[in-house]
Amino acid sequence: MIYIALGASDEIGGSCHYLDIQGTGLLLDTGIDPEADGIDGLPRLDIIEENPDYWVDHAFITHAHHDHIGAMPVVLQKFPHVIAHMSRATEQLAEILLPASARLQLRKQREGTSSADPLFYEEELDVYSYLYRPHELNTPFEVTGVRASVPIRASFYDAGHILGAVGILIEFESDGEERRYFYTGDTGMRAQTIIPGAVYPEPPIDVLFLESTLGADPESEKTTRRTEENGLGEAVATVLRRGGTVLLPVFALGRGQEIIALIDRYKNRGLIPEDTPIYTAGLMRAISDVYDKTRFSTPRLNQDFQVYGVPQGRLPRGQTATKLALSEPSIHVVGSGMMFERTISNRLAQQLVESEKNGIFMVGYTRPDSPGHRILEARRIGKGTKAVIDENKGPQPVRCDVERFRFSGHSHRRDLMELVERLNPERIILVHGETEARTWMKNNIEYFYPEIDVLSPQTGQVVEL
Image (cartoon, rainbow, N blue to C red; front, side):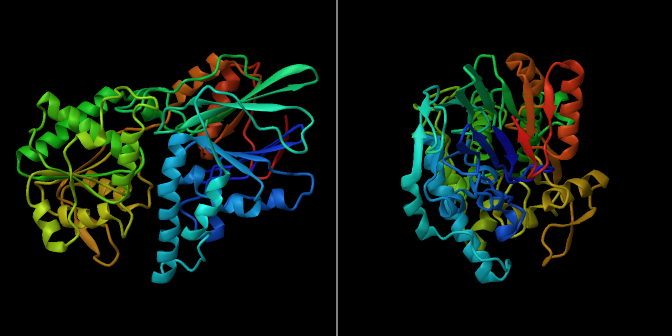
């Protein structure tokens, strides 16, 4: 039995892991690095292709974020016999997000903003979809491979994080003993606004594949969701009271829907006026529809809540109409979360940032080289400090309110340590984290639980299980 990290091991993007269990070949996620171009963003599938001893029978998709699902069409191109297993909600989201990814790749090539050929085309995706196998939570299904020497079954557990996210329990016998592996995927132990906290299998667990995204973030464990919700609510209310416009850049899948639900909560509490217009746009609207359609078949804090039960208008496309929408006290919940160039949030930020009556509030992580991070840093230095939001426009003075609030769908590192204690595995493989994050996790697990064998493999490294 072996494990190989096929995705990047020293960063978060491109989650993909290979397991060979008694002759059955499994992929845990088929993600792509969203910051890389073309084939440079793919996991190291060549490691499997070039070794005749390796074989892939099944792929598991934990959730529909691009860094976990984005390479699935390529995997099905290269290994056409593979069956892709996911939750029903993830399957519905894939039918929206993968075609959108194909269109974006083609557009970037035609515009000249990317020299890479598209990894797949929209018309191919219908052909691959017959290989998708959706499953319910807590319902075992067989994934025994064609070369297998023992039967293998898998089960999905609710992972929190976003709609449809799952952790994967893999069970089989080895030398007459029952063995249990658990892959957390991206996991959120605490409830958000729509999605409840994760559910995990009962111990014992032999090998735990543990995400470590926030392992290097001490601030995440010091803040509470209630504090962040209250802080954001007050910030939004302050801007609206002075007649300003609020921009909330969000990730279209997950964060966008949670923030709309939170705004609804603010209105119900009387924190902001009930008649404050909310504008949404782009892919987020189609994803919100999936959230609503699956509310009775997926874990929810309140099954009666609908994202589209919160009144919201579609952001106008025309320049004049957009300017009019931005001229009134209103809230704009649009992608992208880091305000990258050529996105809706970037375009709106250019129009709002120079007026001190407005507010731009980040509700997630912003990469240091992103426009979102640049305006945060400029505002921290002082009102009027200039930052580049768009290279073509050049530096702009940042006079509006700019703050970051921590709304993560990931468990912070102390919660992950609690999960280690709860599951009490014999061995832990640390995944999905930058070097500093995995180092902190490894050192602390080894200190508090010296009986657990902790590994932090590099990409391509073969680990005997």
